[in-house]
Image (cartoon, rainbow, N blue to C red; front, top):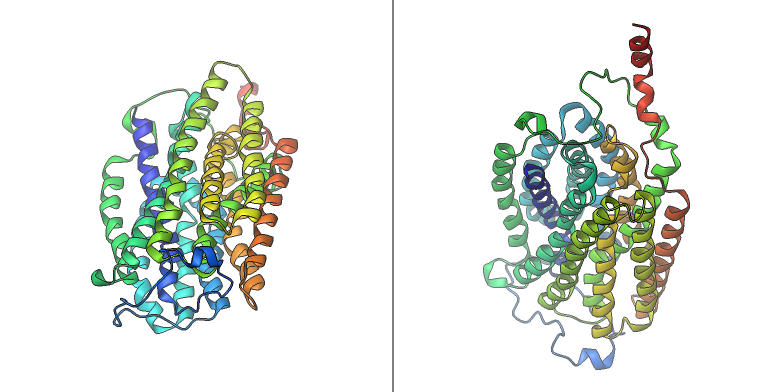
Length: 459
């Protein structure tokens, strides 16, 4: 059972990372002086959700940043996040996933505490700090994959990964709801306090992590069946080139890209859409965007448990199971994004489709997310880092495209085009994964051991 404790601890790391990462998506609504869109639908504009700043404390700063500066700020984190994925996997392979995660927890807490101060100096300095935060947090996923690759058995791989990735939607729920509540509560300090709150949680988590999490089962004298190579094998150089040109690796990368594109769009841009187009108050934005995240956490764990059961009972092969869940998750979410283009001006319809999309996002925990461990365990951190690098590029691609479309005119028509584009990408990602994905251990991890095997036979 210790492996599940490790997975839960990784989940809490993911929650903290997502809170510090996405807090700014809500906070920016209050950080910037806004002129709300005149295209707001009349029927919704008359509701009690319309934003009002009459009670705002003048001591809480609001900055005159243009639309492109705002979108650059929202995407800045992901420039660093993308760049750190492969180095993070290599570093985790060298010094261990636990040590890398410890560094991340402490560093991201310090960066969160510095964010309000840098915002007051210049938006460029805050953008630089966000890039640095991305570099730090970019090492989390490959480090955790390295750790879980040592702790997970063949039969519980999907569940272990799903527990970790459940921290993403849960972090979204916490960040959206708590940030919306804090940022709109001017008496307790407004948006700066949201950064300070998350920074204070880091040291607590770091202490728990350092004391109770170990790098591998062997250090706790625990043994169970895994695919890890035996200790007496001599490890050669990392087959990085073979990994980067592998079709199964690219199947994971494109699948993740399509999935994370939809998820990041909702997380990064939906608060801006609700605020500027539908005129929703900051506190209500936090509520509306946090509820769907709960469904992703639930469907993520449940679909992973179901996938492991199907594999364990041999109802379907590992590969067919992964493709089945991709077909369901990507197909339904893609169709929902397309439907969103025609119902986004009504909050009820938007919220229903929002819930469906994030519920389908949870199905990734039974498909593309555990697939790196299906094709390699020894180099899973590097494969996870490389594929996550491709997927995480959506974090800055989305703000660039959104900023370009709404730079001159922020109206409903521009957002409809975005919904249709993302829905189409979901379908394309599904098709690519189904065609090229594999679920067997690839040959390239074994190449480093060929000389040793030959010498043993000779002896």
